[in-house]
Length: 327
Image (tube, rainbow, N blue to C red):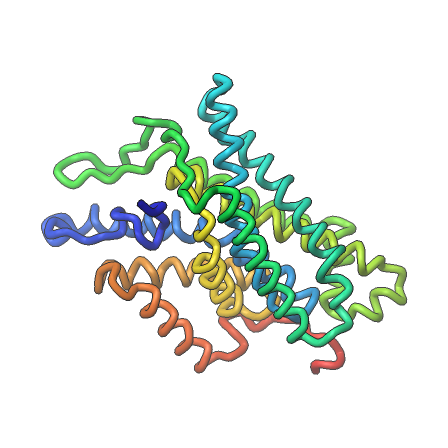
């Protein structure tokens, strides 16, 4: 049995009743799109944060998401066993997953990726691939290649958007997950815009050497970016465990590739564009599933994204600040 993730969930399948109730069916697909966009958005922003400050693609965020989802599942189950409420267990597991992932992000930056900042981009990418394989194999061995399940949270709690012959519901855990994703996105945007770290991040993204000459501790800023990116990836991992009821060591690969494509579509290193790319990716995925079913949905979505990048290689967001050597 495999974990039901957004791209394989029966909620995205079509049936013969949609033509009889077009308005409720369209609303249901809109809600599916919102939930899926909220799922991709923190992870796409994590990719964009690293892309902007390193000018390299960090290929390990999918596995960090997987690591965060497994941590969230274990912590949530433990809190439920201790008698905590569903809300307390979900919130505690979110905080634990973010802290654990942030610690992993700092350790990987300090021990692996910061020393490679002066090396070639290829060396950085090879190290990221190796780190991903090591992390995935570690979790495969730790879980004996089994899926990890948790009891359904907020069971029987749902919001009836439309009643009738074709009811449209939004479950409580979906509402909670969407709220957390939006909150994480907003907090990240405020952090980048209004804090000292955000100013240092923007300076390093524009010109790292000049930022260093102006007194910015670039190494600490890059470490902080890896920590922030890993914490955002953990939010997506937590949504996997909480919203879909489980996780496994293999959930990170495809999820990471999709979020990376969303970040690239939004504009290389453009955090705001990454959020836009996540919405575009979710919309494409739902439209493909509605039109053609779940078969070959990944192939179709990647094909459309490739076509978009051929038309606009700079992505949908074109407000990237390049370094002086790249202008």
